[in-house]
Image 1 (cartoon, rainbow, N blue to C red):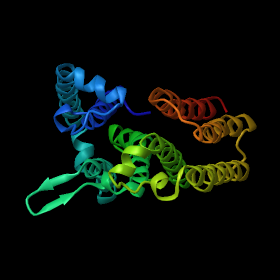
Image 2 (image 1 turned 90 degrees about the vertical axis):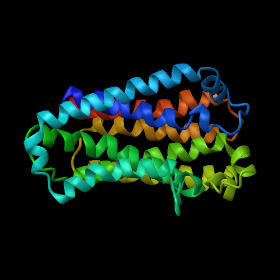
Image 3 (image 1 turned 135 degrees about the vertical axis):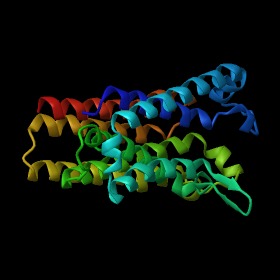
Length: 267
């Protein structure tokens, strides 16, 4: 387990990243989204929050660098690539706009879920082990289980992002942003993409657990998030409020983390 400093740093960086998309100075249209309205009405508060968490990130990064200076000097090329690939992907998601060059991955509708899934999988699967290794003067050498966990988390978050795109269908359609739901329609997205991906992910995990002789309760706990995703995906055929997406779909990430942690610790 990495130090508590790592979790403070990760939490602060996450807050900064997600508040970035609701920077009022960059909102071009205040639509009927209650969350957008809230950010627009609390601009000064959000600016203070961003400043506070920016200072926390800088402070924690400086402490980590000082404490692990020798380990950082011994980091190999593979470890450096793991450190930078996920923040770089997150930066490219929002975009780089400089003279003669501009790139924003979030404008590629079908790619959005995979970008977010890749970044989240890196933060929750690779970073904890990588930072633990740096804290203890070790080299990061991922095992087969590590690769499997990365793919499982990548798939799970990607599916959640696809479901989240459903709430923005009308806006994305008007902006000609070719998300999956815009390209193929609501029912086909749910029944031909989201549900099959969940079934494949669940089946592969159960098969892997049986081959590795996981405890029955460990397998059962880890199937709960997949089953909940299937139920929620089916429910999205009907119109849902923004709070349904924020509480239920985002809540599935917390459920997955809790189930995975319980399975690892107790079984």
